[in-house]
Amino acid sequence: MTTPTIELKPSAHPLPEAEREALLARPGFGRHFTDHMVTVKWTEGRGWHDGQLVPYGPLSLDPATNVLHYAQEIFEGLKAYRRPDGSVATFRPDANARRFQASARRMAMPELPVETFIEACDLLVAQDKAWVPPHGGEESLYLRPFMIATEIGLGVRPANEYLFVVIASPAGAYFPGGVKPVSIWLSENRVRAVPGGVGDAKTGGNYAASLLAQAEAAAEGCDQVAYLDAVEHKWVEELGGMNLCFVYGDRLVTPTLTGSLLAGVTRDTLLSLAADLGYRAEEGRVSIDQWREDSRSGALTEVFACGTAAVITPVGRVKTATDEWTQGTGEPGEVTLRLREALLALQTGRTEDRHGWMHPL
Ligand code: COI
Image (cartoon, rainbow, N blue to C red):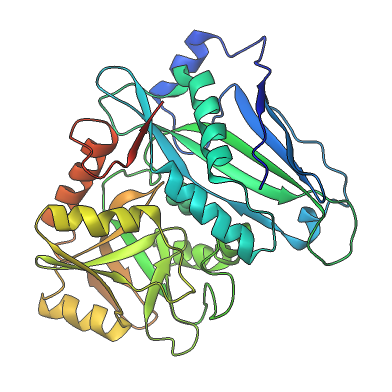
């Protein structure tokens, strides 16, 4: 694997400070982008080359570019946080880099070296450091690395050219309500992924496939859709864009990685962080009947969604085609809030990083 150098070609016209500050005051999620982006090309026989940090701007693509037709695309999501001393650090970029490689293998794409992935993120964050929101809140700079097949032609086969890009966007809460509990629509007739499919790859098609069910969830008055497994239509897998975690008192259960779920970095982090806080945290299978019955009996005390964008978001209500229930008290649960605070304290540098997860710039 070649490790290309990344040449710096900064913008002569970054956004004026006052405009940037206004955007940072109310960033929303994924609406505004920083002054720069990193691009690296891959060509068959040559490997990775032409790494550049350039002004943020449109990509020019021929209408016959392979990705536009056959969706050979993968992406990642990770965040950079401002620490109390004003410095900046990203959270577990190595984990995202390795998952990016796993997604590339599944989608028959070239693997980007872990060090190039991290270097690209580091260079972009260093260049656009002023875009990392101030310490003190939950805001961060969300990084979106992605790779697309750029060969021109309509043949269905792995492309012989690719483009890796990293862009960055200041981010507030993913859900407009912040830590306000979300409602879940349990989709019993649509599935997100099938065994042997691409459910464990972070590829755009999984998200496109979730949009109709997400629209159905919205029509049912719910914020997010939860999927069951595609074979027995029984086992809870994940939400449209984040993992789930079930809290039974002091025991946490997150659905086992069966191959059709995404191996979330936040999910993995919480398995360790929960144990640090004295909870038992394990992977396991939770059926929809169990979810319903354990909620009604009170054994299942809390449920939350977790992901880079979602952080930890409590679930307050669940609706299916036949019934509906309030999750726990309907309010954010104690365990959910404690884990959320512990995670954010670690990420924003307010507590010691005992696991070596933070990557200072
Ligand atoms: C992330 O959490 O980083 C994702 O890619 C999920 C998406 C719903 C924004």
